[in-house]
Length: 443
Ligand code: AMP
Ligand code: GLY
Image 1 (tube, rainbow, N blue to C red):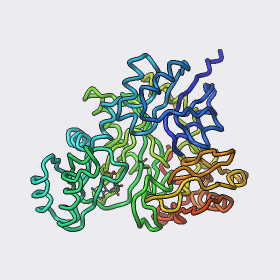
Image 2: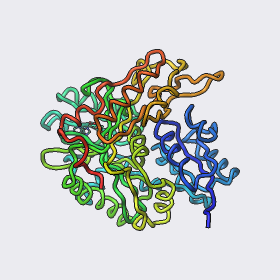
Image 3: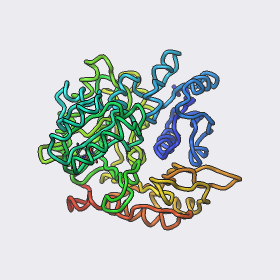
């Protein structure tokens, strides 16, 4: 019997939301799709609704009025505000962690204590609410040292202090000047770690989990990882240097015990658990937990995932992940994907909006290319820039080199005033290994 088509609401407005919407639209269960607030790309997949991702009250009203069957809560802010709890209280079906389960992301202090309690590998740390005590502790440590605002700070709340002066300045900024508001009143001070950084994602239903191939984000705006941090300007998956053995260590010492720990703490985690890891010489260690899909990681994952996303989401909500097979694109050879983010001039600092964008259709006419919108909107019938991260150009191929080549070739078709992007996405990963993609972490 044909299953009922679902009316879907996707919350958020970035490249991640466009990519998830793109995948959802291919589902055998997808009916009408709404995006709140969406962007210039999501309007081609469904209907953009002018409600902010953090306006839980209006989102609830909308979901009830439209009789939405399933809501996907993707960004961190609404999760931290408890959107999942509020929807569930009203009997609405929503996918994502509760506010308590998402605390792993919105409080670094909570997250570090969780790691300690469940013996998960991470940097040594202490937590402070008192400036003088934090200062005394920091001054007594070996430099560099890492200082983190405990709360959400748009990816800007982590300072790597090379000297004692820098450490004290960071603590003053967070705890006295309160440049991150309440997010910096509590700080984590932790040991500096070194090694390549990778992103892990796993679907969880609260009891069990299904882990994705490993991916890597590129957080700095400049080539060779220079310049300020951004939300993420390029992603690749899977990673040539994460072999089966390392992948199993990550699964067995980090992901599975984290899901178990959350369940035993009475905060079962439903949604995507996304640990950020550093591959240190002593093994993989946790940098942080996120309680959602990464952006731009979601874009490469959506290109690689073969299984119907709504089947997995439903299994995750219903506690039935164990019986849900998840297939990654793999014909006679596996696939690799990349997503390269085109940014506005000035990003991640101040940037202008409203620049006319051209060439997306030509780019998408090239083989294996999908362009995901992030900061775009339509104005007087024209597509214009509307954010720092404007577009993500994604490509798939049997090797990472080929995927990157295709994406960079497609980018040549696209233009807007001030467009900037990194030319070296994936290069560091390729340098780690001469592997072209066969012996990787896809299972
Ligand atoms: P987080 O938000 O905790 O992931 O930190 C943001 C970035 O700061 C990470 O992607 C790392 O590049 C860096 N970082 C965080 N913690 C450490 C650490 N203990 N040692 C070295 N770098 C770190
Ligand atoms: N890719 C970084 C993030 O989504 O937090």
